[in-house]
Image (cartoon, rainbow, N blue to C red; front, side, top):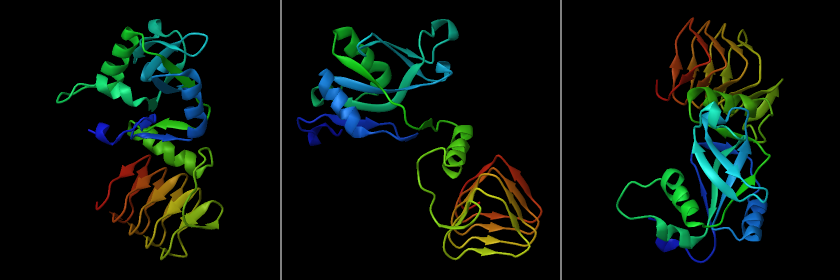
Length: 236
């Protein structure tokens, strides 16, 4: 659908569910140096069976894609990181009007035709936020400084970040790292431990305990609740 807006320059396509620290300048330079039709960004992982394994030769040319391989199919540890540099001519290979996957349909077809496809192995932070556990991990990594992304708000003390209009009862006990969003209200006796992120206009009732949670905006948690390793969606 975007093809009419493309010109002769390579196009960067990114999956929408990844948190990534990637130098796009280095990626584009690699793509042009290799003369690639498609460059696939790769990341090394301990368990390739959860992702799309990509096998290459000694000069980084892609030989094979193996989607979520079994362990007996694992011959490397570089997986698809979900960022691609694509030459505009490649989009002519995508048929109109049908469901067609870049990863499962287009790339194997290009390999079969001998199109030059290369793998760029990155070394920065990467998290495929494809399930609730990895979504929580992304917040944990940012709060703990393991992912190079800023935490908003002002630093109150000891990795406790607060935005404007936050009200915290003096009897509440808060142990960071955490982020308390704009106009949040923390009642008496509340305990907050570990990686907790709250959106704006969150209300936490008396005596409630939160540990390793993400609370979306406009949400109310009642009195004497215990939430651990949980995601609470907005307006709840």
